[in-house]
Amino acid sequence: MKQARLYFLDNLKTVIIALMIALHWAMCFMAYAPEWWYVVDYEHTHLLFTCVVLWIDVFIMPIMFFISGYFGIATLGKHGYGKWWKGKLLRIVLPWILGVIIFAAPVSYITFYTRNIPLDFWTFCWTLFWNNNGMLEPGVMFSHVQYWYLGMLTLCYIMLTAITKVYPSILESKLVSVQPSKFFIPGVLLFCLANTAITNYYIGNDDLWLHFSYFFVYQPCRVLTYPLFFLAGVYAWRNHWFTTGGYVPNQMIWFSLFVIVSFAYPIWYIMNPFVTSSMEVQKGVLWVLHALLLVSAVFGFLGFCKENLDFTNGVLSRLAANSYTMYYVHMAVLFPIVYLMVPLDLIVWLKAPLVFIVAYIAIYIVGRIFMFLPFFSAGKKVLVK
Image 1 (cartoon, helix red, strand yellow):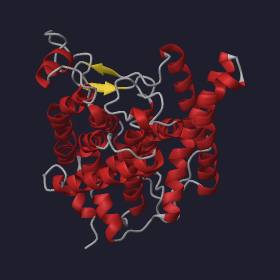
Image 2 (cartoon, rainbow, N blue to C red):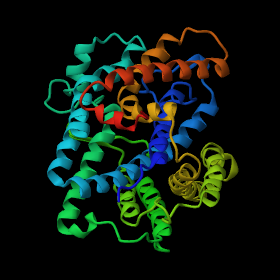
Image 3 (spheres, rainbow, N blue to C red):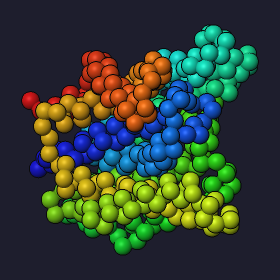
């Protein structure tokens, strides 16, 4: 029997893409923005936007990897390796490569353009981006911008292919819904805590970005959480989560915890030096809060959206259908709009929301245009007829 469409996952993706746009928008107004950030409205920064950035940045990508794992294993079992990989090459791999080739350098150059640094685009490309001062290696400004996710997702699909080749039974969901093992969620939480503590201790910079030649860009402090939540999505599909009678994370428990930690984490991140002089306490509490925020967000959003957003209509279906293309174009649209509105002299509490509204509408419109490309046309199946 064909399973009814899980509209709440479509709507959850819409929410996460909106939060992704909000993250990159808030970084343009945050206090203590990274020096390399593309556009910063220095006359209208505030610590509240820093808190918004600290909060959103923790959990949005693990949720995306969970959803990708859930649908990835479901469609692999349905279509088989050949048809499945043909779809992934068209919808994921090719857009990833084209995005890096076409958009990554212009978006990265915005950092120099918005600061009036006398460096032309082509010199930037061949000395700082595609080449390192003439050497055949990525330059110091090389980046995949937002398309790093597609690269990591491709690796997860390769991993899934390898695992299912060795253990083909994984392609079959269980005959009845199964509640998660009592060790599953505590194990995920413990893994996240250990990963945060160990990587931060040895690397010391949660925001560090590295690249493997030209092919993959990643954050070493977070790279292990990508396959973790991708495989958690696979586990959820095999055990019939979210189906009739299947497991649904308790929204009252997880979303309530998420709300509490959402306040505690950024406040502790900023205020911990004033609370205690012990570096061990500062870092230890921060690591625990980070892991709690991450895990409670994933299961809290899943439970909340399943219970409250498992439906669709004309507006929701259009946003869901357009979510991938909005992700794809948002940086190239958002930053020029922020830059053009820098001279606008309004108080930050009026200006920042206005910039977000204008940018979100523009991103939606450009995304709709991109839906005509064959890479993104599959999103139209979400539309309500």
